Image 1 (cartoon, helix red, strand yellow):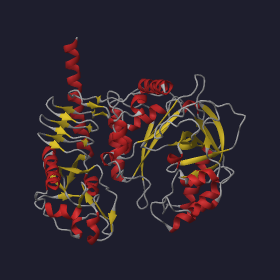
Image 2 (cartoon, helix red, strand yellow):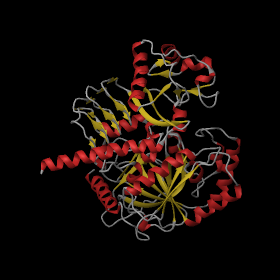
Image 3 (cartoon, rainbow, N blue to C red):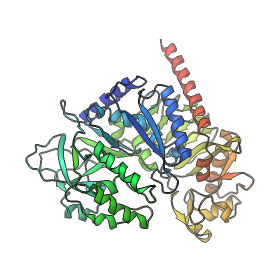
Image 4 (cartoon, one colour):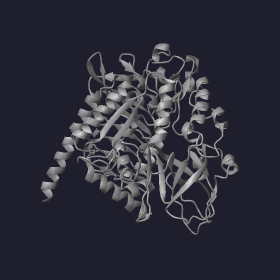
Length: 559
């Protein structure tokens, strides 16, 4: 997919030219709005944005806004499936790319760098944990100039279609097949079954347009004559549609149910839309009585609004919202790696990393002693590893300081600065890569169903000398999970907190006692409440300065 790689590099270069420069009207976005889960996250986002602007990592003269969810029903999440992004936000996930490091925000702005100049007034909606790469012909560009909604569509396997939105397009056989097609959507299916994709004529057959390979992304290369569907990613609404929704919101007052910008807006669009979906709650996170009523209202509000589809036949869609996806794309021989030019060692001081047939380690914004080793398949970000540190395979090490330790394979380790009663302290979350942090039980008797590093949670509590009482869990006592379990030690230094948490992990693996009852303990949920963003950013800045200095010195030595 050389054309895709070239198109992507061109966008990255173009964005790189805009970083730190004042933007002329119409040259870039007028407003970049980021949604946060609560006021604490809002503050964290604002602090990071102001740091980026100060360091000229973003285009200037643009309004960057952060909007927290009002109290009550949430739309912003806490990224429990990618906990190293929980503290500072998924949109600030570091990527192994660029100097200084690109985070998800810069990558999204880079990939959409051509959009604003070909867009009528309106709003573009996108997610923080996906990446869309596309290539169009030399004289072609994506235009957002039609009334109503306009969505990008990517060819995907039917299996991928079951977890995404799928477009049923108006049949138009007169169109020549190209990298870019403008089509009309007859109806939009939200996470449909394969049976429904066929039933509503959403399925296309490859081979009907010549010997053409479909791009992969989260979908492997599709062989000839394979069936495929067009799935969604980002969408745009024109000014009139945005105004309609805003007026509706004002008349409804504060929302008391979760409205999904994809499922609840797009399913109402196109001439084939029916109200049937408003009664289907299979994909709703919390069954809410008010939701069905709200869906009906939105359906009638938007019914008849056109849904234009920009079909990108040479495109890929990647999701990086879970630990497994994160490791896959950063360390294994993923297509994303070659298309984006992701590096094994990105803006770091590090000995060369181990490689094997299945992949490599990935080091981001970190300082590693020449005497330490990181196994293939593991990611280290914003960390310092001393001599005699050995990281096993398939680990994620984030924001940690580690000395003389062997970290077992499939470990997740992430340290946070926390401020409790005005005192700055540190706590490190640790668990197994296979552990399910979201899995919850309702009673203390049932916590034996939870697992920590593959071991029954009750056995772990015995090893740590902790009692299974209500006090062991923070938050809602009907929602007991690894996310709310108060098991992580709080220490006065970052390295001590890492040592203590690795001690509790090692005790579970060796079935040897490790007394946690003398420590002050926090749950992951509480760590996020008490997190001290300023200190975490200062720690990253310190690493940044040391790496920059090291690079200057090695450049001098070379010359």
